[in-house]
Image (cartoon, rainbow, N blue to C red; front, side, top):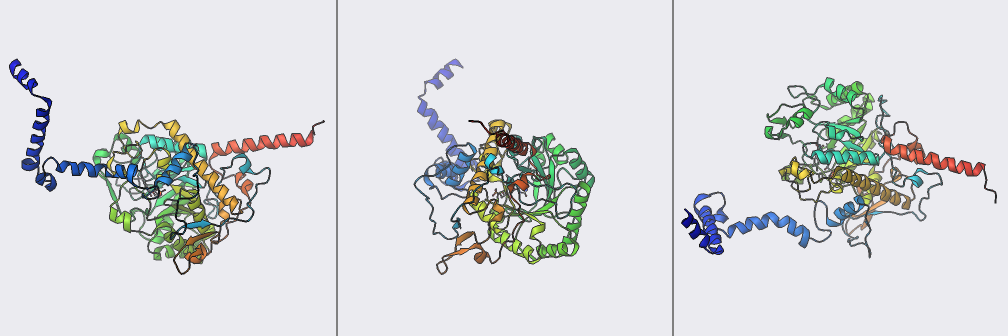
Length: 544
Ligand SMILES: Cc1cc2nc3c(=O)[nH]c(=O)nc-3n(C[C@H](O)[C@H](O)[C@H](O)COP(=O)(O)O)c2cc1C
């Protein structure tokens, strides 16, 4: 035996390499049948598969220019990373964008910018922008809610995101006064870290389902009673990346923790059908909304991507006739993100955000319904100038999903559907998510939201306004085509936004329904202190 080992050790290293390659070649030609290229070009054929697998990274690092990549280009990602880290997020030398390009947006600045009066809340916190409307006010819900931040975390479930990512996001929204939408996977302990929560559910009714997988009002009522962090409920009708598409959660991915949170059985495949079992038409949907609102006291909204408008029109007509309906509507764009979707859906089904939102707003305007509803927009709106455009078109808040992921370290590897997210965000791998430092990442999300709001308020002031709700369709222009080079949004999308009732930022700060309690308390405390100091100096003038 020893002499055989001695002979083997005597071979030079390259003979071992050669031996290995011969084995690979034999496998390629005679054993495997799946890959023609490896069969026809043994050994070297593997290079092709390897190079293809690292192609996206190579292009991202070396080849793609700053504005080239999708869904988010390097400049956009860099802006989020720098904002989240409170680093220098400016650019030097002027814009590198072709500002004459088709669809380029311009916000029209005022000759003299808006100036805050002395005791204005934005002098204390330049990032304070609550929603100008109150969810549930029109329908007299028992617990109306005014989001304390116009930017919030969009629906992403625990399951599609890791526990560490969900926890970092919830702590981040608490620090920035925003809300955290749970996504379809139920309410987990990671969503209960102090931030306001919007409980979201889809056709799987995870967290509020009975044994047969149907919606359970009893569970809904109990969930809301046990969790005062839930401030509103969102019923998912569809999302931009895969409207009308159901899904399966494989039994193998159902851990005891996920089974408990979602209310499903261990190890058994769970179906999220394409349609709801709780309602089948628009009158039933409205009744379902009203039942949930009545049972929980909370504002109830719906989320949808826009395609055909006839059923939305039916909804509007019933809202006019009955005085009932959703308290808020989240409109997602076809360019929206997802944990996993077939490319045919993601690329082609449902309208892009500007087309979808403008169609819906116009329809609600036709029936004088815009004041009754809080409009939330989502789909790549997490940048201040884009948000200004969205406010000009009629949104009251925006939700961000992938931008929030980037603020806590997502590198746009685009592998959310594989469980191999290198940043530990869209994976259930314990090892990968261990890389997330939850307190640090929560600070990053909070800082991204604050920087975003501060820049949005600066753009708002440059346009001569106090709050972005005051933007009109004539405050933004878009490059159209060669005949009519540049037009106001009102001319391009053929409607005018209705004025949002707004009595000043102080009025919003004083609102009893304002959310984000921990964040807001700090602003109020600081404002009271500075008022006391001011009063003291006025009452007891200094003697010189
Ligand atoms: C990882 C991931 C999971 C998502 N999960 C849900 C979900 O459970 N329910 C839903 O309605 N939308 C879901 N979405 C869509 C987002 O909530 C959002 O509507 C969409 O990504 C557009 O926002 P964005 O452009 O800021 O990413 C998910 C998106 C991502 C990236």
